[in-house]
Length: 132
Image 1 (cartoon, rainbow, N blue to C red):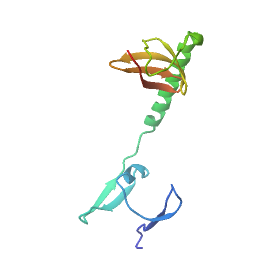
Image 2 (image 1 turned 90 degrees about the vertical axis):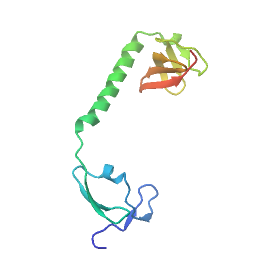
Image 3 (image 1 turned 135 degrees about the vertical axis):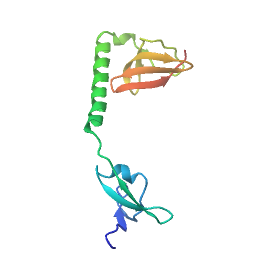
Image 4 (image 1 turned 45 degrees about the horizontal axis):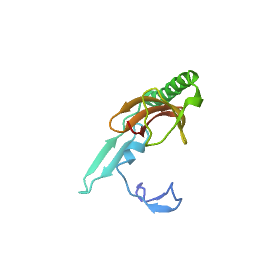
């Protein structure tokens, strides 16, 4: 109808729905897209999405690779038979080797009061609960 989108196919359930513009839509538009939207009062507005720099996407993957390298270097110096099994009620200190049922082996990098610790696992750092 006059070039306006009326119905769309849902990417979640696959059925056809009435089109409803959302505030998140500006984030999903391709870079440099110009969109006209109507506000609740009926006033027309124009939005232009700005292009994103590709450096942001690669920096997070580079950070993950660096974290994995750090984990591999730390684990090479450790004997996994000395790892403490993880439990929320257990006491840990910086430098302890932890054996977690889901994340695997990790090294305690920092403890923060009252009951948190940062652990470097193979898939990246995690904040877990503990007793200090």
